[in-house]
Length: 146
Image (cartoon, rainbow, N blue to C red; front, side):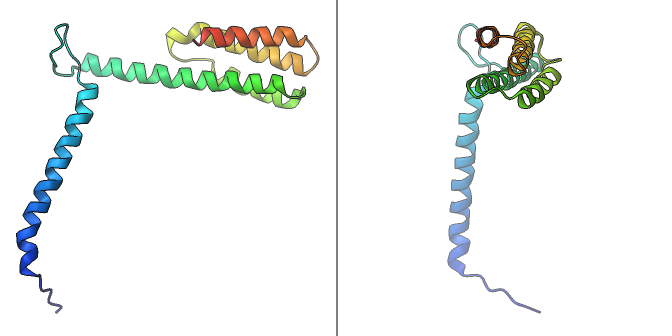
């Protein structure tokens, strides 16, 4: 058998180190909790309810979808800045149409404008419409996402 011998000084230091780590963990939890703890009208903290949690989740989902839609609009703008590439434009259009089919109800108008912008950019890249029409559609999508 292998014997492990511990230095007696470690047995005196270990509780102090553990207490310090516990205090740091509590401080980090307090800081993190302060940012998500709901407050009432008077500014006093209150317990996070199930409805509050659902609202936080919905807000997080809203922001994530809005960011995804903004990246798609930026990609369409990039296509407009480059030489017309019908294949890339149609692939991006198909992906955007699929991704923007459903989502948060508050972003329905922005999704509709994004789908129209994807169609306009694909039509411009393939020679079906003018560049001004595609630029206008992308600008409308950008405005809808503000």
